[in-house]
Length: 489
Ligand code: NAP
Image (cartoon, rainbow, N blue to C red; front, top):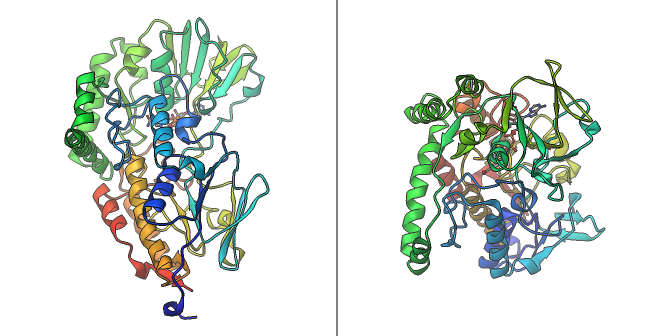
């Protein structure tokens, strides 16, 4: 059948994941007139990251008014950087307001998606068989906890858990707590717990650059003004966005003056706010600022200077029932051990078993490292779209802005199916290879490639991120170049 003869069709869409991106997809599908869609969510609640991460001190280091759907501003954010529970409540509220909740099948993960006979055959964890024309994988970026391979971890006699699996039944007051890691998560936990526990050992393998921020509360008068005058809220969003863009654009050029400015601000923060010279040297990074995800914190340096906090830089030899033994032979006795060692950042939809056209297996396609055309779609996986997928703009951007532009792009592709111009859309292999080759060249010039260990790097040491400007990303997302795709009937 030629492309012109295909009948217009309203595709059935399966969305995987009811986090920020899945909720967004459902809202935008409905708005665009698609009515046949469902969200499969493996958990019993929506919210993704903000459901899973409930550790003390959790907050978003992207300003709250940017970490908000553009179509659903929130005049009631309590402070510049919103705490996690407020963000979780925001997604719950939006999902209810837009009637997304009734579209979610909770406690139903998707272990398998197979493209057969021109459609996606979905099997869920309850044994349900579903068939869809389109799959949107809204499965998140930092989703699968990475638990460090530290000898003896399982022998610890006290309570021990990953930061994304916080056990709130465990009392902390008066306890000796060990935190392994110094990523954004561990820094927030340290700031929150330093004065609550009797001792906090922060096990630091690598020092962090810490950008000072002011986390100011919005007064009741300000919130009232935002509520009554949407223009004020919009103006705030625009000004925060402008400030943020400067940073987002700086990271792509390691030698940019903006990058130098960021490094100087972090350095001044360290020099003037950490008083003990020994501690200051422990906390001094030996790599470029921004190479790892920059830490934004108003109170970390205050927290680590509390008498109850010890920054342990000696390497960890092993975990024993009583605590952590460091390489100098010292045993640090602990009651609670927090594993804040990050996430497997290259999993994306995996371990879902995804088979594309002709049985091609996503595990094989991504065996070296995950690749997707414009971070959204994969050759031979027709009508299969990823939100916040591989090599997207993940470095200190608002992932909501990214996801909104990606959903807009996907809807434009879907309109080709809806109009009957084709049944299947997948990027051309040669376009994908060309895009990826260019991306790698640019990524190697970014700040992330200046010599540090981070979750931004793939296993070949190449930054797995969008290496161009923010503006370029939004421009590319504005209009799909259909010639880059195979549109087939
Ligand atoms: P992360 O940035 O990957 O940090 C993991 C930490 O664990 C690092 O300090 C790492 O040390 C350490 N580590 C890993 N394996 C270790 C081992 N075997 N022994 C000792 N230390 C080990 O993870 P994260 O802190 O959970 O943050 C991940 C990302 O989540 C962030 O970069 C950010 O994008 C996001 N996040 C965002 C917010 C927010 O406010 N928006 C808050 C939390 C997290 P090395 O540095 O030496 O590798």
